[in-house]
Image (cartoon, rainbow, N blue to C red; front, top):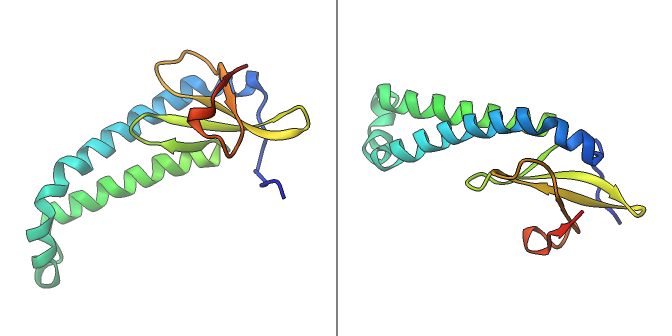
Length: 128
């Protein structure tokens, strides 16, 4: 049974979203990097959290995590699938020859130029 997706994209529709997605990926990278920077300092904060709620550092980490969540949610609301946060790898469900496949894009590519079978993943990318 083929998976179901909220929407299927044409190549043109996917390409129209690229500028917005670049902005969202930039935003994601900022929050991802902030979380990585703060993560090594979390152990003492977590140990103290039961007594003081984690303090300012714990709150800042929570805010960054929530912002990251919101940015990912925004991409999902567009019907796009985030496959790799570090790479900025995105898939767009697409109908090709009567079956659903993924259009595949990531920076620094300027537009969608590849597709792959759902099961194949990035390694199975083929030119359009």
